[in-house]
Image (tube, rainbow, N blue to C red; front, side, top):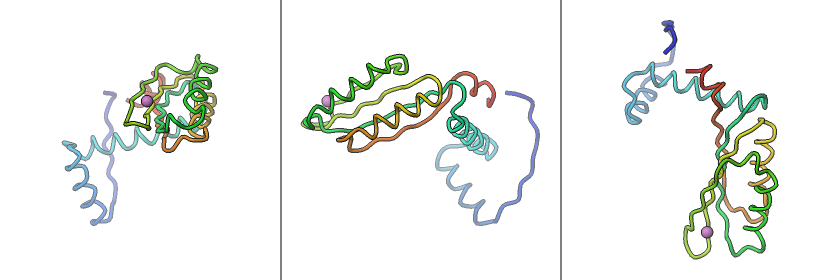
Length: 142
Ligand code: NI
């Protein structure tokens, strides 16, 4: 860990109580550790939005594999951007539904574009993109 600086912040009592309850339930040993994680999360999310530099995104999609040509379309899109798709995981949720998790890595604007394109594919029932970061930002914010 880098050199530590001590800061003091002012909070409404009820806000602090709710925060303490939440971080205890989540298993944080100290407020400092919880606040560090919050700040890091905010910085990494902001970095993802800045679209500069390398980004890493996890895209989750749930779809019905009976939907006409949908599975083939999702595969085609990922092959077309094979330089951005690091890995994919496919889980057969039941008779009809599939969960696919793809890890994308590359220039921010391309990663965001592909992730949004996958989620917008007609027939994708549910999904989300979570951004994390490449080595650069993680080293910067540790
Ligand atoms: Ni499946």
